[in-house]
Image (cartoon, rainbow, N blue to C red; front, side, top):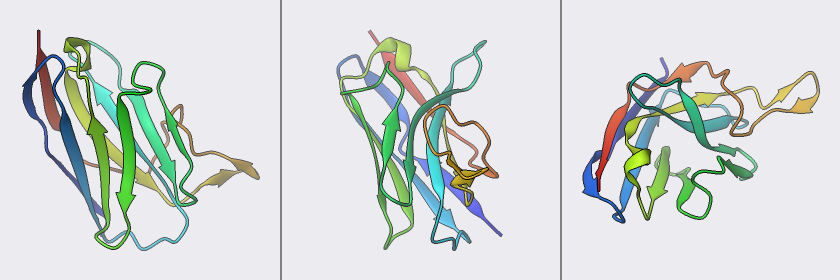
Length: 129
């Protein structure tokens, strides 16, 4: 059974940093796509960053240069390092994973992808001004 459990959320002031973690268990695929998403109250869920099993990363324009997605394959943990946080970064943050990297022969692991088989329950990030 695949489980994704996020942690590391909290409350910080504008300009601060947080590192989110997503502990992944039961996910034994050598090829995969993983991503971080966020959803603010009254807003749709939006992609923040993605990383493929090949290490390729993509980011939403709003977080480029401030957020970094990475993974520790030995510990099966996905990270999202968030620096220079802004009040507009306030949201529930979710991690997601899927073993399908190619769809119809096309590489399909990027921040615009929303189709994932597995999702975590989320961790809240609140940034005050």
